[in-house]
Image 1 (spheres, one colour):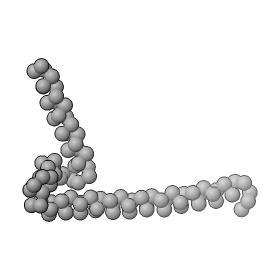
Image 2: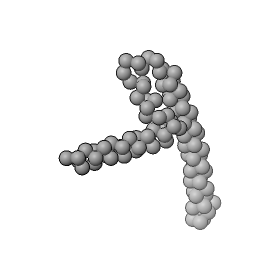
Image 3: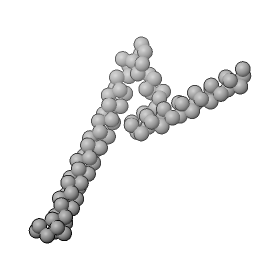
Image 4: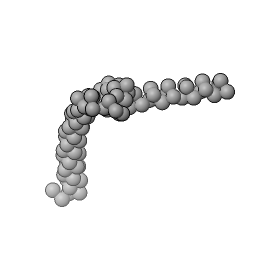
Length: 93
């Protein structure tokens, strides 16, 4: 019984660490404890923190969107280059 409780405790700790790592990837260190304050009756006190969380996420999304746009342009450029090479090899040029 005691071993079961220890295992449940370890599983809870591991889950918390995993959750924190995932949250860190999204929000650059917005801790689970801070996020926990955003729930419940005192949540209205922490709207600034929530705004900060969203701002951080929006900055990351904007950055990712720019990277996707650049990657798409490079893929299109490479496809056009490949098409020209195929035409050249086929003697259509």
